[in-house]
Image (cartoon, rainbow, N blue to C red; front, side):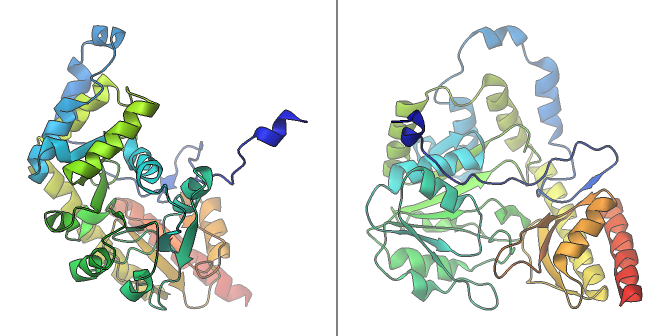
Length: 356
């Protein structure tokens, strides 16, 4: 028998392209166009490199305490990991261990089905409505757990707390995970529901609103019981998941809420202006409450637009998948980057029109 018969085979997640070219406008992976809080730079300058000889605190307590204080919860309600992907992966491994299908939308973060396949978790993808919203009635069926982003990715659509509460209320025997990677760009977190629902887990990240995608910090907040179960699994897999420098940088970012509010507000203002510009160019899109816009053109093919932009070193995200193959996901960059995008789109659309 070949050794390959024992290999766990999966179709891996495909991340957004990280171009090696110079002079690119990178609007394809929802990174923040502004630097992290100034306190993070200070940590990087002053960090004692001799500390790298020793293992970090396996509890990352300094960061856990800072998150707990910032979000008004107990430290025992906080779990941290290497980016929200690590946190979500650990949540899949911890809570979705039954034989009933885990439920999530058909148009959503494309890592969910990958984790389900890796961990051999049955799942069902439930179609969004025609206007790309979640129908809570779809989630009132037998299941082994539920997960969805809010705002959704890649659509940017924000669901109300009433919708989330309805889903959690209908599933007292399942863990419901709300992936809030983009909540800071115009939504209201479901954290207020935690006191009411022991089975609700909220996951957030430092990658988007706190400009720290390259550092990798994610966290979950939930009941003490949920977080205890996640820590049990974590310490059965890898005790030292977060390095000392990352712990210090994360705590420093949380110590400057004014800077956080300023940069997220700038992105939201640019997003609303971008909606006007895209509309004028013939695009339509759901009302994004995230740091990206999920847009389709009235006449131009999305794949052709994607290729034409890439040829000009402007990178956006495109998926050749059912239901969304005519959409481009456009990250909100600086005003100058967005101006360059709109100028390029106007020229490309003109060229496409001339050829027809």
